Length: 234
Image (cartoon, one colour):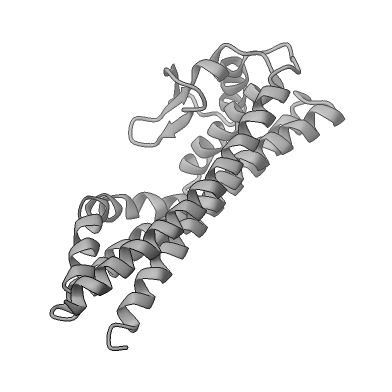
């Protein structure tokens, strides 16, 4: 009965945390959408794909291929096959927002080519994160239900969740550095003016907030489970 009560309390606390995280996430995503829509109205002579190609060429990255993927803001760099994947709203758009996103993804390609330490660490963590993500939800649930009789299960869940939390924080310097590289190149290449450089910075800053919220949300959840484990004898 005591284990059941702890499980119910755990579920309630987790539910409250998820509401807070969801609201915070919605605010950040809403802000990103507004910024992107605003800066999508500011046009430059080049499309996102053209900006990406010019930036790759300027760094001598001839082996990186630019591809077009479906979706909105689904842009990403894949280090496995060295592809720069640009979304519908970036690939063919000639806005400052598209240029900023395209340059940001090129920043990841430059990181990969120069063996940027944080990106290297992040890549090495991917197998462990993939393994942890598959098991963590079930292990944590079982750990809360069996908290009094088998507390070690919750501890295992905390360790698994800790891996994904660490991954979220390792991602932060990777994303921030990619934006720094993007903004530096946009300015140096003359792709942006004083005003559009400021707008590109604002667009990338809004995108960075999504990673910050994800990391903090993961940390909040991790600390919550740690508190349950530490207070199991109360």
